[in-house]
Length: 316
Image: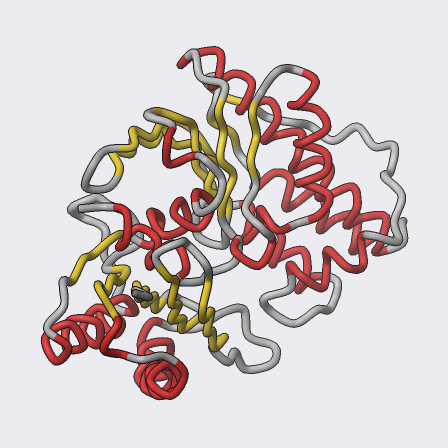
């Protein structure tokens, strides 16, 4: 008999609900990107919460019209940004509350995971990573750029942050440069498209790696903003060079991290992992060096609840 597993995620910029079946087929992947007023660089938490409250009932209504809700076996949600005690953001309260109510109404099991774990789940589905006991995760998004040492345990994950940025995230860097050249926030997808027409510039860009697997990106932000202000190069060339340089940062810490922890399996997740240049350059360079690098499908890199639904299915 068909079984369904539901995932709900209410992140800073996307309301999402997903349904997978017992064979890990994605039945529904529903998302509503939150609206950001033109010219603004983001949303306050109360603005995002209000939009989630409006959006989520619409997604639940759509789900109820397209699947037999009597066949739902479990519902899971994201409850906080990371699986740390002090980790909290108001946006996740919306999805958590609605998921809990649904579980009681339908009389089905309920499970919570962090938003970060959801990204890992989205990378693991149909990838074979669920059979790996320990691996390195690279989570690169608008709010996070971290190297994670991950133990895949029965109830979820044991996650230790062992490297990453010491200042701004890769996603913040990308969006700030995008706004600088006149694009709307968030701008990563459009920047990726523009960069396809570019050529890597021959520039001596400093790559500041500290303590083996920690690095800074704010200096890179200033460097590229100055290039744009001086109008020295075409935007497509600047963006191609930006993404290529980011891939170099990531390549260096991945190689160092794999060496330190004697691990060869690396899962790269988060919205920035959808960038075509970063995917291409990292895959090309790390494959030569014996690293088993895996990216989710680009559609599963950006915020979604497929990973949450999958974890609800496989974790006790």
